[in-house]
Image (cartoon, rainbow, N blue to C red; front, side, top):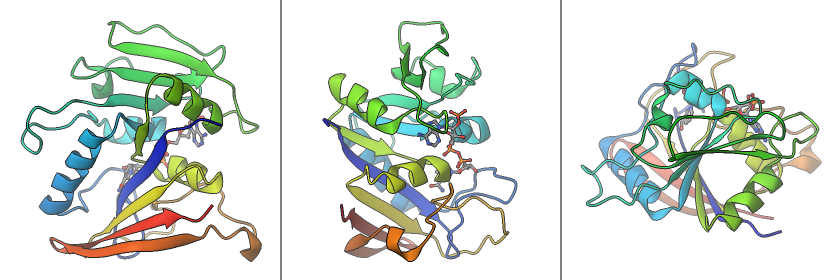
Length: 218
Ligand SMILES: NC(=O)c1ccc[n+]([C@@H]2O[C@H](COP(=O)([O-])OP(=O)(O)OC[C@H]3O[C@@H](n4cnc5c(N)ncnc54)[C@H](OP(=O)(O)O)[C@@H]3O)[C@@H](O)[C@H]2O)c1
């Protein structure tokens, strides 16, 4: 299978949480980590999130000129099996191109030449099939992909071992809450034999927190 090089990037509290217990976004990264994230975004051909991150955070997914001179604005990709994306979300603005990957038969039309909707086959959970989505992105010229969550999408990439690098920024804070989103949600593994093994490549103190870089062991 042809697929892009996949980097997953996320930020969590010391207790592994990635948002408020209400699922609203909160800032965990330091200024230094935000700058690193924008530079990483700009180095990639596309940046991908799940539809629930769009619905809860309404991110623009662009590169700010404050952090990168003449940003190239990678393709914004949303995995949205039922095409639930509201027409007024910021990721549909014309600051960059956007690709909505839905499942076959759920395609909708959106205003503007910068928005494209493509249907992929569905997996057995009726979500967009990740292998199909990655193959499609590769065919469209995406050779380096940055996945920016949320926890459900990150879990799906981890479970299928469809990533190469994982960056986790650990902020010096605790959020708590039994149902608070974490960096890898989904169903999780069923037994020790299914453990997803990673290799630590680098650990750096960055601003007030720590940046850990892992490589996927296939
Ligand atoms: N700290 C961080 O780094 C960070 C980053 C991003 C988000 N967040 C937080 O994470 C939370 C959102 O995360 P989330 O886990 O609720 O949602 P999510 O991962 O953003 O999106 C999950 C949705 O994606 C769709 N999807 C399409 N194909 C899929 C596939 N193959 N596998 C899994 N899902 C697929 C599914 O909806 P359909 O079936 O309808 O398609 C699924 O419900 C928010 O609280 C946000 O603030 C934190």
